[in-house]
Length: 94
Image 1 (cartoon, rainbow, N blue to C red):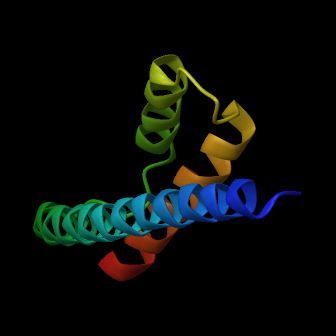
Image 2: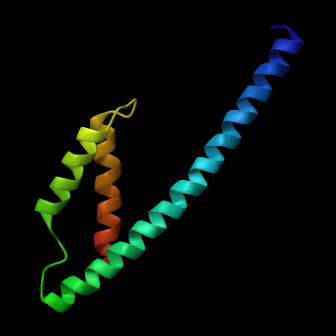
């Protein structure tokens, strides 16, 4: 591979990685916002005497996301990611 082509590809790779880093920071901010909201919901549920675990609600969330998903994220991967997010939020509410 020619040097200038290699250099151009290296610059493209660097730029894409920088974009990924920015997205990761945005995701981190959003995940923390989601957890703060889940903690507030947990307090309200406790005050109401409700259980933290709500499988029906979690199923509803997953179904809504699946309907909105335009890809390339596969539905099975979407489910894994959001199941983990909800599990972490649920554990934090206890």
